Image (cartoon, rainbow, N blue to C red; front, side, top):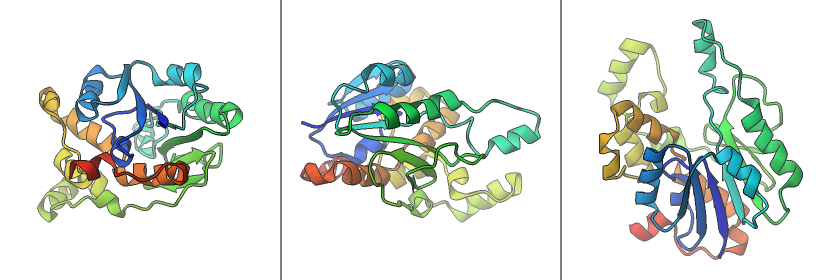
Length: 237
């Protein structure tokens, strides 16, 4: 059975695009988000802890695929707006580029890896392998160009107009509420998320990887050696 390491797992949007019969170890730091992941994907092994350190200690453990999505806020183009307001931060180069360099240099050749992150406000220090939706990706496998149409989000005209009156012209991603993401991705937040505030619910869904991208990466990295038996969402349907 193929082993997959899913780092910074969130609620597992990428997982929804993978076959049912894989052995996934997911690592998530936030216990509340980890509880939601465990509810959605109860068959996976779940580690609540530091994904960055876990990668360093376990990247040689015979994985078929390592997927890592280190935190993106310090790299995002939104930093330009924050810097304009005098809110300066260093980009977390150690996490993003440290993981890329580690995996590019030492990852076993029979282990596919994918590091994905936002398109940064600066020229990437290491050229990406490809682009998946609104993110760059670094991998030791050839990746497809995945352009999801506004992530499939359908925003009502009334709500979009309301946002624009308050905050100028915004993209569908910026206008979307948690329900828009849930509808677009086919993932419903479990009951344990009912206690979260509105901001956290929206942010967790916004950080969720589109399952279409998860499936495209799977097919590119492992599809040739793993017969397609239906993704989790296809089986659920």
